Structures are given as structure tokens and as C-alpha cells.
Image (cartoon, rainbow, N blue to C red; front, side, top):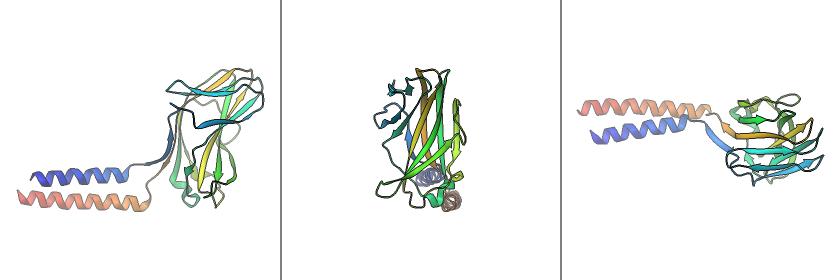
Length: 199
């Protein structure tokens, strides 16, 4: 009976693991050493972390700066609808807004181009909170093998900051994964029946 119980628990764990969304890449901004400034029209911008949040700071008034991660996120453009960008923004100061673009790279890490207005889909945003962006809404270069998010921060008056808490690219289970969960469930039911008959 004990062996049946162990097997049932193992099957349940396998089913739950198969059903869970897979995190392809995530950033908790506790360490921002992988981020750099690639554009700073007014000068004096910076990025830092207090161990919890990433501080994307733009110093100059009526200015903008762009920040990008050196991480390269594996991506299959043929299955873009299965990917989700999850975003947590902690805060924005009074005279600033931001946007997120996505740089595309080929299998050799060669730059292919930028998808602008990934979030929001037009202009810039002062959104604070959590949101999900289905990545199937956009058109990708068919040679894309990797992506990298690029954050733009825009100011009215100077000395402005956007605080990021968390960002992740997740992959929704494919139909074959859902089928696998179904097979786990059927196997689980069969073994539970077998175990009950052994009592």
C-alpha cells in the first residue's frame, strides 16, 4: 500500500510539472549588472538596484534614455503565440513615462532589428502594477532565435525614475504538453484503481 501511495504522489507531481507555465527567462532586478545604457540623449542617466527594485534613472529634462539587458532569451518566432511577457512595475515619478521594445537576434547573436512599442502598443506608459503581454501579437524576423527587452524612459522635467520589480518571458504549455498531462491523469486513475483492488 505504501508503494502505491508513493507512486500516486509521484504521478501527481509529474502532472503538475507538465501543466505549469515554463519560465524561459526572468529578471527580478535584485542585481542589474547585466543591464546597460545604450542611449542617453541628455547625459547623466543611470541604472541601479537596492536589492529589490531596479531604478531606471534619467537625469536631463525633456530627454530619454534606453536600457538593455545583455541576456539573450531563446525564442521561436513560429510559435510566438505561446510566449507571454509578464511585467511588474513598482512606480514612476511624477514627470516620466516608459516603453518596452524588443531587440531580435539570430542564432549567431547577430542583431536583426527592433520591435518598437512592445508595451504599450502606442506611445509611452505610466502604468504601475502587473500585466501580461501575449507575444503573438507582433511580427518577428523569421531568423530570430533570441530576444532582449529594451526599456526606454522619457522625461518632462529632469531627475526622474521608473522602478521595475520583475519581468519574465514565459511559455504557455503546447498542445502536446496538455496531452501529456492527460496521459498522466489517465495513468494516475489506473494506478489508483489498481491500488484499491490490492487492499
